[in-house]
Length: 439
Image (tube, rainbow, N blue to C red; front, top):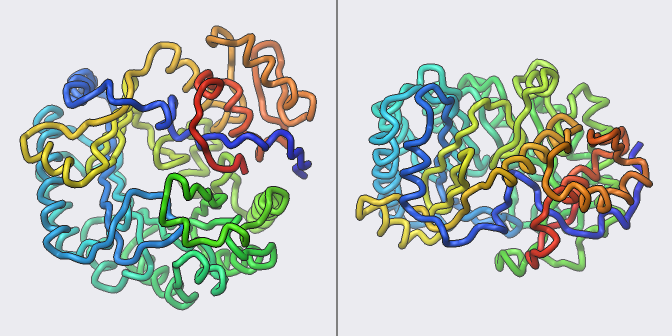
């Protein structure tokens, strides 16, 4: 399974959680674009919210999130005040409509106190109809306990994601995230008792000092703890973009061939354990909603990765959060000071993004179909001749197939999915932005 073709993976490529990607964002959009996008949403259109909590009790060296230290209670309280005001700005334009999904991420939402979480959920319920909404929360096991489990139970949270990354102690030390197995097991037990029925583990490969044996042991331990989903990401070492990653010894990182073997091994190991592969880096038990969406052909991809969320409008709240609309991708101010200033003045905090053209939407739909369903119709796609030429080495290697204008991944094509998707991306020909490894 999965023959290694290093020449096809030489070019770093985006993860394609949006199209165009954030690398194409500029400052041509602003608060007026956010107001216009909200006004254009049909009343019956499913809408989801993402609330960004850009704080953690401890900052991990590998992390690519926009986050800072939760070391001052006044800072968190001031941020939550502005987040609530931004929520009101959105609700004033949308009304008390029913939401499809509410996700809290970061950073670490459990950098908040359980009481702050309660207050935030109460404010949400006061402005929106959450009766049919799925609530999901990303969690740091190092700051989780019974008081937080009780808060999740009160809120009716059924989906949670634990940042596990690895169970190997020496690898944990190398990435600045030490969390013993017993700590993770305790959090799992608490989450199950709190009513979480869809539990995800985030795992990583390609970490400093990580061997295939380390990954094997981590997968064994993860399987024993029984999460409903797993996301197995390749570590993206981009210290030119993330200064905190300079604390990681790049000389200890596995090479490209070792990363490929780790991805292959994780896919085989989790598949053998009964998890259904979802896209190129997610896995789910057959009864989990994510696996059911994949089987039904309704799997989608947004800023949170592969998802079963049917909403095509995802509104991001908080510093650096990105909102995705059919006609626009809009990102809030990353700088917390400027975010506070904008919201405090009664304005949306939109600072970067782009307006999606018809061509952008066509290419984005094709890339999403390829990554989620394994095939895409290319008829009418702009730049099709150039895409055909760029696809030639992938077709020759047998990792993709082109039947007329129908592009498909072959059985060996999964690890090349993002690289194949990049052949459809006209921005990659001229962009100088550096991305992470294709696997």
